Structure formats: structure tokens, C-alpha cells
Image (tube, rainbow, N blue to C red; front, side, top):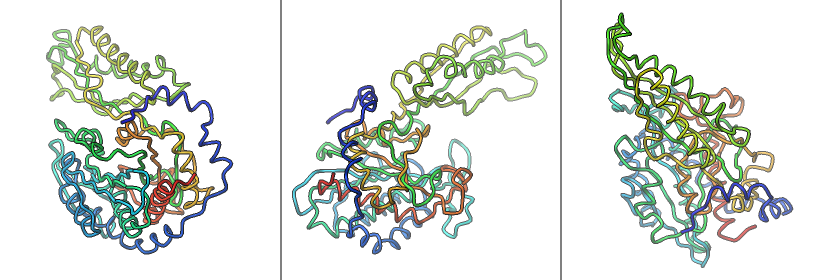
Length: 442
């Protein structure tokens, strides 16, 4: 199994690749007629599948009914799905009637602890308890669309299987949003459970519907696309005392406030953000129980986003150093777990593969509608596959015409609204990419 080395890959981006030069001079590709025909035949089916998954969402590592529905659909196509990978993962292999390459296609299946506010007739009414709080469950990130699209692609590929060169592995992945505390899951667990032990693809493809792009648009870029994501937890330990006598103890709230401010210098003064961006954000602070009691401790949690492994390691060390020394300056101590768990690596699109498949995306969307988006500070655990196999991950615009993507409710919003035309474009794009690669188009 080939493992990509990020520093070498980043360096390779400084010069145009051979594939990029070829793509720039090649004649414009056109949409395959079998892609157009399949999209027309499957359009209503994919919409119905997406609406079903949307109405009945399940959280990470809890996708039992979703996985069962996926497996049932695949069996209905005559495939033999493998289930139970990384808890609820499902895979199936489509073997073409002709020799050819092996590739993999991935869709994620999990939803989020979000109470839906879209007003759709098929809106989720599901509820659950998450981190001790009652909440709704919603496909607020579009994984329902991804699952519906890949099932449509599966249907199309099975229908043309006799003329298909090579083999295609369909990967329906749980827990992309992150496994619950104390559990394993997601792409890394899929790999640990032997996803590619008997099937080693030479390329892998994935997509994500994206509110920041207009429906009808595709976004893709070579090299780094989405950031590495790390979670941290810092516990500042003081000495509890009465609020009227702060000198009688050690105030962890004041130390924590100082820590939050000083931590901003980790990026603004210690990281070379002229080269690549980075983010350190605090997401929650917990401490104290009563207005007139200075508590024993304060807990801070947050996230770090980076695009370079060296910057990633340095920011981890700098934040830990800041936490410990700022706490010490206040007479407190800090237990800085930076990071406190395994985070997602950078999602990197293989430059040669991306350049090779760019004409395929342009063929279905139109050249003017395929854009290079800026680096995205959001993270994706598709990154784990991309470290093992040359991969391409692309965005499909999800915001309806007439609505400004800059102000539309974003992914993870309770009002996230997918324009269903993105299902058609996603199906056509993934199918065109698949067929072009298998047939050796360049």
C-alpha cells in the first residue's frame, strides 16, 4: 500500500505536473451518453433515497438502519455487500466484464446532533440524547445526499457491468463526523478493519455537497484541499476559595482568560501564516457553579486547523507551552492535552490524478462551472484514504439559484437546505469520473 508523504507532495505542487500540462492542452471532454442516460433514468430514485435517509438520520456509530437500507439496496442490484466494517460500514464490489483497473468510491452516512429547522415535508423528527443533552438529529451536512448519489452510481454501473473494464469498490462509511467519546470509528477504523486488505485500489474518489457553492458548480483543487483537524483539552487547576477572598486561593478563571488571549499569539506571532493558514479556536469553557465561589478548576476545549505537518506539530507544542506557563504565572497549573485524541490529517488531492480527471468534471458541469476553491479550514476523514491511495475529493454546489451562497445557511446549520439538482450533478460527476478512469481517458 502506497503512503503519500505530505512534505514531498506539497513540494511537487511548485511545478506543473505532467498530467496538468496534458490536461491544459487536451481537447475538451464531453459527457458520456451513458452518463446522461443513467442520470435521466435514476433521477427520481436518487431523490427518493436521499429523502428517506434525510427523514431517518442516525448519529455517528449508530447508523444501523441506514446501513441496513444501503445493504438491502445493493443486494437488490445483485451485489454481495460486506457489512459490519467499523461498526456499520458497508462495502460492495462491482466486477466488470472486461479486465481493467481497480478503483474505490466513497460516501459517508452519519448525521449530526442538530434539531432541523428547514420546514421540509420530509424533515427529520428524530431526537436523541447527546453529551447528556436532548437534541434533534439531522443530516445537516449532506451525507444523506452522498449516500443516495453513490447508490445511484452503483445502479448505473451494475446496468453496464458487462462492458465495464475493471472493478469498483463502493464504500459506505459511518462516523465521518467523528466517533463518540471513548469509541473508535470512521475512515481510520475502516482501514484498520481491513478495508483494502483484499482489494487494493489504484485510485479513490469522493464528493461533498457544499453550501458555499451554487448548485450547478463543482469545486476541486490539486494538493491540499481541507485542513488537518485536532481537538485539544486544557484543564487549569487552581485552589477554590470564596469569591470575596480571591487571595485565599488560586483563581483558575482569571488564568484561563489570560490563557485564551495569549493562545492567539500561537498563530498570529509564532506561525508562518504567509505560507499556509492555521487556526486555533476555543469552542467551550467550563468552570464554576456559583456566582460567589471561585472554583478549583476550569476546562477549555477547542480545535486546531493546519495544512502542514511541521506547522501542526509546532502549534501543538506552542499551545501546550503557553498553557503551562500562563497558568504558572497565576500560581495555577495546566494539564494541556494537545491534541487529546487522534485528529484528521490534511485532505490532499493527488495532483496528477486531479489534473487527469478535471476534464471529466468539466464535461458534466461545463468548464466555466468547475472552479478552484480556496483552502478549506473544515476537515474530512477522507484524508485517511488519500494517505493510502492516490485520491480526488471534490465539492458539489448545494445552494439553489437565486440564493447567495455567502449568506445561505451553511453545512451543519439547522437550516441547511440542499438544492436537489445537486444530486443529479453529483451522480453525473461521479459516474463520469469513474467511467473515464476505468476506460483510461486522459
